Length: 191
Image (tube, rainbow, N blue to C red; front, side):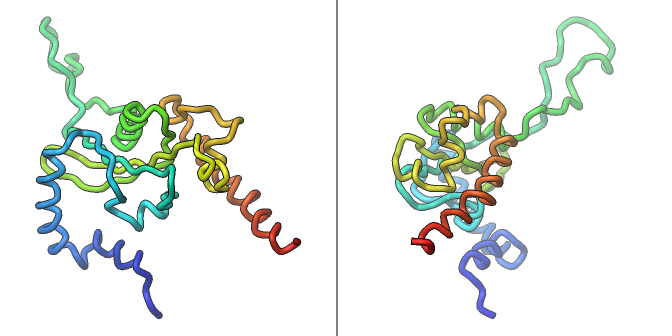
């Protein structure tokens, strides 16, 4: 059985193409480090992952690469005296994932766009890179698309990523896929 192009792209991130991948990524990451922290990119770096998460190469869909600092979530050591256990410096768990931080930064940088989804791209010694898929809800191509209409509808509140509505939105998209898409597929056959 023939494999799809996306399966070969996915293999790129697995063990099969690991050595070649690491050599090429080293050159790419050097360029990415010199670029600004939030950059709009022409096309996604991991196309197969972007397509799974709702990316389409159409007007109104934007991909942004976000760079975050790596490292533990440690706080500044307090000046006043106390025993080390009560310093509150180490072992603090961040209440947001890196991915959510990347989505929020991209949403703040592009206030007219809505966050659709995001995925991890690469790591190096200093930074962690994510690509965030954003959509422009004001364009008719996005409003008329059944995949994106659940995010851009009137009943759905705007700026959902900053207001922590992402999980609720996922449920809405799944509901629309189950209910709306079958209806749209049946409609042309009835005419």
